[in-house]
Image 1 (cartoon, one colour):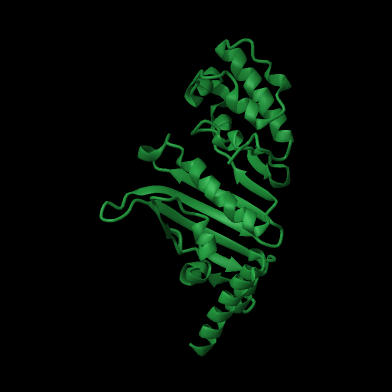
Image 2 (cartoon, rainbow, N blue to C red):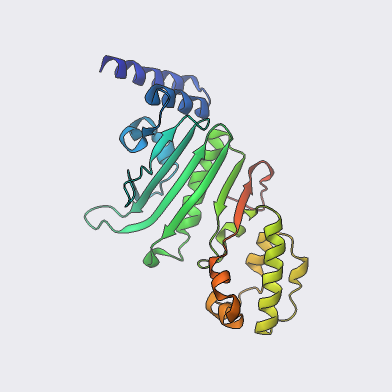
Length: 251
């Protein structure tokens, strides 16, 4: 316990002196791992800056230690240069305690990259901007960590491409060409005219194509029945170009 007290005192000292957060987290991990992975769920009290980055005012965050197969899904690891895997869910306060969303984030400290592995909002809470508020809160953490990129596996089946509206782009760039071909074929099959999608160069253009017109993915699958399975399975990887963030994206 005496060693743990010195550990806590050193954390307080580093915070007070304003040592870069990434360096602080790596030092804490070194003290906890001794060269091996550790259970972040059990040590989260020493990583409260990280936990605050995955919260939303008015909701509470609960971490998850293991998944259904017993695999550790909330952990720290130094073998890859320093990474934190954070898995949990947002819920309303007790006594109601309704699950609002499930998330999984990987912070790669050495490479300055955040990997958004999962964000699934429960149906009753969709459509109120919750995912954007959650993303905005995460951005503040990434700024503090000096991260330059955010990578995510985007969903095409739900939402209105919010990831594209806040500045994520296709990664690699060849994904944009594939999306152009898909959009052109769907527009042709649905009889949509006046959209020169083959000239689109950004995810934001696809997110806004057609203005307020709504076309479900079921309609698109019906228009291209032979491609239904491929269409449903395709999920583009997208990246946030952190160093080129602009005010037009907004936060």
